[in-house]
Length: 286
Image (cartoon, rainbow, N blue to C red; front, side, top):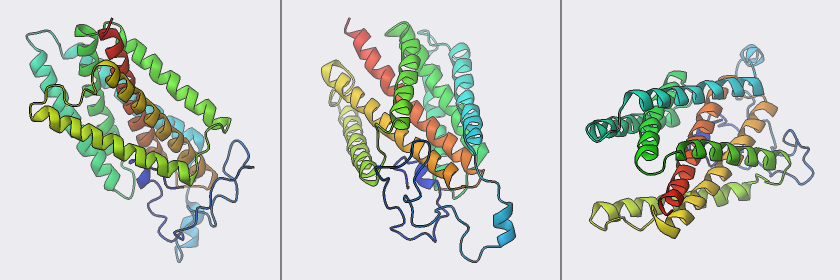
């Protein structure tokens, strides 16, 4: 199944020989713990027609342990650089401008690295870990400033909230309360498009002197928009879980574990930022 996650959309990009309608849909009777044999007409990760049989046989298939290790490495890089930037980049009134400038620069570099990786046909651990490192710098400064000037203690709440959302989605996915089908993926893609268009409009209104833009960062509307962002992130996480499950079940190449780590990390960062925004508005209204 081709994920709507912008990172995982590159997952399985080499499956060019699979028919366009290879994905049938996740049947009602699929066993928990793995996709059904009816999900695809053919193995979507099978070697391309005409490929050397010995090369295909020697290929090491990805395992869940591979995904866990790469994801832990990528998230660990984010956490490490976030903690270092929190400790080394001060946010007091004298230095906050410089720290914010470095954070914005790190965010731009992280976006550029993620874009390059998204356009590649194969994962690059250097690009993925570089993205994680610069993303951590941005998160560290933003989290420190938020905790210092707006809502003390909100960062711990944001981390716990992110864990809670992730655990809830994982449980719901494993119990098949969330059914990741073609229709579900299409709905999430449409919702994400609308959400991003609203964010772009908000930025434009803010840039051209409309004060706080469309009001998505304060009050009831800000809380509603943040909750929608969290729900969208949770939907992306379900798509990510399905993508990993398919890759393991159908024997994707081992290197694809790095794409799993990349996609899961970007989704978790999204959820954390949305949770942080909602909690900040709640604390600011007290």
